[in-house]
Image (cartoon, rainbow, N blue to C red; front, side, top):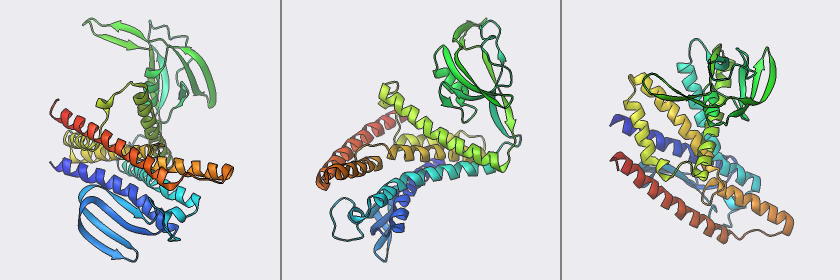
Length: 357
């Protein structure tokens, strides 16, 4: 139960941080904020300070930042809709930026607290398995992997991941003796092997070892950035698999599924320190996920609003016309209805998975 409560609070805090990004950027540009709320539902506490009502609500599942003239026309010169386009753009992107920075900060804290004493693993080629035909692949022991099939290697796990997704021929970029070397079309076919117990395994016949970079301050910062960028790429890969149909709605998780995953991660950890580490790592991934998802150009999301802002800029430059606000509002309303319907489907799916349905 403790980890469920912590997971709910952590997930709600990440969403509230997103709204704080909008709030802080709006205040920076002098845009009037009518209400900033942490949480949703019935109001528990509220305080009026200047033009803004600050409130704490009962359900710890997010929050909101209500700006003057955000969804309707306003004669107030400090309304969101009357601000310069570039200011609107910054405010709309502020939530996603805050989520990404939060993920980056969590990862940095993790590295400060849990950085391996020996340093960070850098993937290198350590030799070929006999009988797989990879002995003449062109790689030499000690080659550092920089890119696999066009994907830059950011962390150690990228090499086995992208090798598993590649075909029989793989484009590689490695560092050898301090120089970058490109190896195109390296033949590394998957081959099936059966052991004495009848177990089948598929391998490419190469071994991935590692060298160690020392845990200096510079390397910690570098590894923190690489991990955050890798999380962004992981989200994009997942979205691509969803579009291609490689994964279905059953594989998606909403708030219920995320909280359940976080609580399982915490409860299955052997010690409280391990639980904290695992939960923080998962929180960083979720924070980056929220940043990417909110920037998708879909109606009702920040990315959808940014799309209309940019589209109106182009239309005004070419034709001195903009899409009427009410029509943009209709699009966002339809988008919101679609997102709510999807959320309900995913939520029921998450509940079903909890009960083994």
